[in-house]
View 1: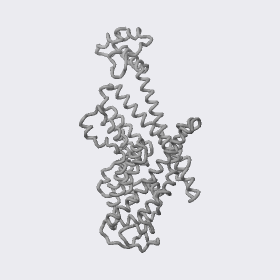
View 2: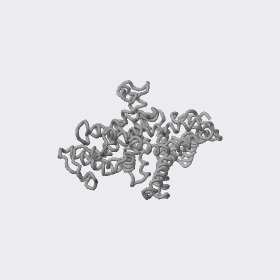
View 3: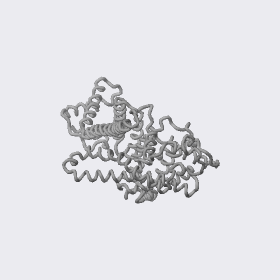
View 4: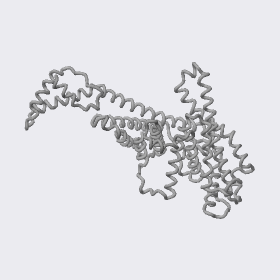
Length: 455
C-alpha cells in the first residue's frame, strides 16, 4: 500500500488540490505495482511487463477521472459551452427578431420585404450559437489541457494567451463567406478595457499605473465617445462606404434628410478641399436647388432656416424616433429578467423602465442635434464646408453622453469606439495608407484571436 501511495505522489501536484481518495482494489493494485517495479529494469519488454504497464496507466487514469479536479474541469467546460451558445443564440436571434419587427412595421408604409426568410434567420442563429459555444468550450479545453499536462502554476502566466489564440479561430464556424469585423473589434476593445482596469488596480505595477493615468479621468468615457463621434460622423457624411450598411441606415433615419442632401454636402466638401471654385453640384441637378452655387451647404441643407433654428427643429422629431428605438431595448430585458416584479411590484420597476427610455432617447436626440448643429458651426467659423472641418467639429455630439447614467456610458463608448476603429481602418485602406496586399483574407479572425489574448 505504501508503494501504491508513492505512485500517486509522483503525479503533478499542480493539477490536483489534494490526493485522490483510495479506490477499491488498492491492495491488489499495490501488488501489481511491486511486480512492475521488479521487472522494469529488464532489457527486453515481456508480454507480462506490457500488461503491468497498461494496468498501471489505467490505474492512474482512473484516479484522474474520479478526482474532484476532473469533475470541476468537466463542469467548467459544460457551463462555458452552454453560456457561449446561449449568448450567441440570444444576441443573433434577438437581432433577427428586432430586424424583422422593423421590417414588418416599415413594410406597411413602403412595401419592403425581409432580407432573410424565417428559415434562413433560424439557421443563421443556430450557426452563430454553435460557433460561440464551440469557441468558449475550446478555450476551456485548451486551458485545462495545458494545466494538466504542464502544471497550473508553471503555465499561469501564458496559458490564457494560447487558449485565446486557439479559440479565436472558431470564428470561421460563423460562416466562411461572412466577415465579422464589428464583433471582433468590439470584443478586442472590451479586452483592452479589461487590461486597463487590471492595470489601474492598487496592486499593479507603479510604472503601468503611471502610464494609465489618463484612463482614470472621471469623464474618460465621454472623451472616448467624442473621439468616436468624430470618426463615425465624418465617415457617415464623407465616406459612407466605411460604415456597415445597417449603421448608415440607422443614421439616415434619425438624421431625417434625403440621400441627395448628404451626397451634395459630400460633393461640395470635396470640391472645397481640392481648391476648386464653387459651381453647380451634380447631386442637386434633379432638385429645386440645381442652381445653387456656394461654398456652404446651408442653402439646400436647411432652406429658409437659420443654423440655430434648424438645430432646434431636430429635437421633437428626433426624440419621437428615439423613443421607438429604446422602448424594446428597455422593455424586452425587463420582461425577461424582472417579469415577476413587473406584476407583483409594478411601481418599483416600471418607473425605472420609463425613466431609462426617456433618458436614453434624450441622449440620442441631443447626439443627432449636436452632430449636425456642430457642422453648421464649423462652416460658419471657416466660411466653407470640408472634410477636415466636419471631423473637427462633430466631436461635440459626444458630449450628449453626459445625459446617460454613469454605468451605461462606458458600454456605450466602447460600442461606438468599435464602430469608429472599424471605420478608420477602412478609411486608411481607401486613402492608400494601408496596402491591402498586407492584410489577411480573414483579418476578422486575427482581430478576434487578439481580443482573446487580452481577456
